[in-house]
Length: 103
Picture 1: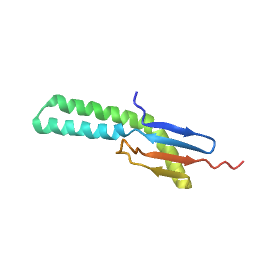
Picture 2 (picture 1 turned 135 degrees about the vertical axis):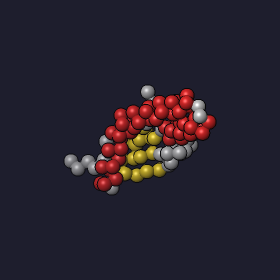
Picture 3 (picture 1 turned 120 degrees about the vertical axis):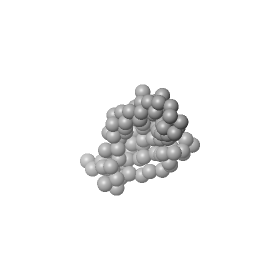
Picture 4 (picture 1 turned 180 degrees about the vertical axis):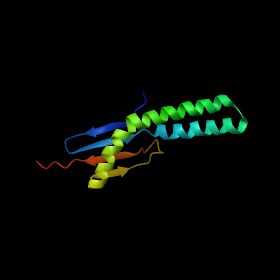
């Protein structure tokens, strides 16, 4: 299945996730196909858009949500750094969470 985040680095000090920009562009394409289906009256395109959106929601709930919980916690703690863009294939969004190891 499609992975939403790829782990680039996982050390005791930090973990870095890279977002899959294909998901963002995929939903844009699906919405465009759905809108074309509505304006042209082609039911098949509307159904394909619906199926793509259900797959996108499934990926969001199963793959993105667990990482987003960690990201929100790191944002509250001030241990999150972000660089890149979720729209870019050359500089994809990278989220780095620095672990506070107070041992």
